[in-house]
Length: 415
Ligand SMILES: CC(=O)N[C@H]1[C@@H](OP(=O)(O)OP(=O)(O)OC[C@H]2O[C@@H](n3ccc(=O)[nH]c3=O)[C@H](O)[C@@H]2O)O[C@H](CO)[C@@H](O)[C@@H]1O
Ligand SMILES: C=C(OP(=O)(O)O)C(=O)O
Image 1: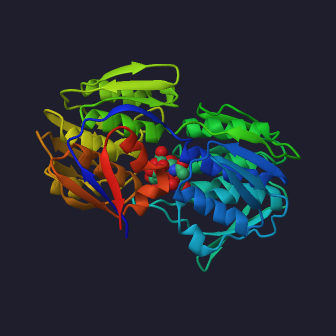
Image 2: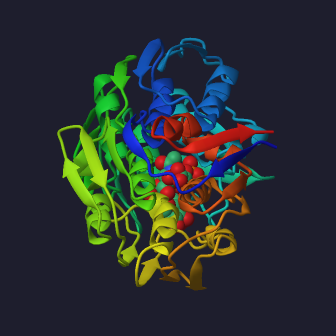
Image 3: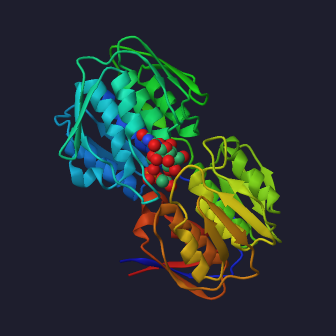
């Protein structure tokens, strides 16, 4: 098992470029299956979840090629509508195949998706949305079948603005007969990106980014070319890396508007932020405590809760962090405690008493962003840390260690 070895207490400085967003690229790749032909997607991050996505579309009969970060997917010869269990279990995003396969082939078979252990992650909202659109969904022996002669436009009202269920419902509804409305839709920027891609394919989708999405069903979609939006979670991770090391860094290829809740909290924590058209500069010295509550967009993203916790461990005063999205997303706390952090978890709340220093330790990543959090803590800690289980980090950060080294970090990968 590979690990990262980090020598801490190096102030980061310089420039770093964000990759395309994992969470935008994943549904866009699934959406290419809605039509036959060659779609071209630019700025796709090369990371483990994307590799699994590639494995799945290839198995279904697509052919795939890469040129730098451009992915070409030829979906002409799709001849399978079942995703095998071992690939479904690899990641949460495997569930995105339901909507497109059902839309194009009227039938799909999947198993329950896997992914990082951050609490229960049911797919009931996905299934209810497909049923609303007229699909017959049956579950037996661990697999889920959905079929429909042709999906019918419908009004889907989500109990909770689920990102994945909104995306799946959009992909299913684009070729349904008639008009659909998704109410209490998630408003994440990645949903807007999916709307842009679907419209380039010939779909008629509007309203993404608000809580009501309108989808006028069309008969036919064509392949399309698209550049995925920058990764706001990667950007937030680098900004926090700059802050925790009291550094001076510029993060490029960002849409600052997508990061408002994050830059706002970083300013409250005492950092200086300058916002450009497509970059954010951060300078940090003393850090102050601040409270954070994770919320659906445009609130503070749950995917940056763990990195933020590392930062607040070293901020003067007591911070309270409340996780409202996932039930069990504080597994990084025990590991931060090994490094000297003082954090108490009560249910969905973490109370953090800032300490003046963290110390290097051997720690284990329990999921993708917990891994990011531990690397950031290690960058600031005295001495050497080893972060184990970095296959989680590889799921969602492209060239993480290389990019941190570009900023001056002392981090290496080792067997
Ligand atoms: C690939 C991708 O884009 N992943 C992101 C997506 O995950 P994902 O799409 O899985 O997140 P959701 O917004 O669906 O989940 C939010 C909450 O809703 C619950 N829920 C969701 C679906 C459902 O059918 N039933 C249900 O109860 C979940 O258990 C969770 O508690 O949004 C999350 C919330 O911003 C992010 O942390 C993930 O990085
Ligand atoms: C939880 C995450 O991803 P996924 O939904 O793909 O597990 C994440 O990116 O932090």
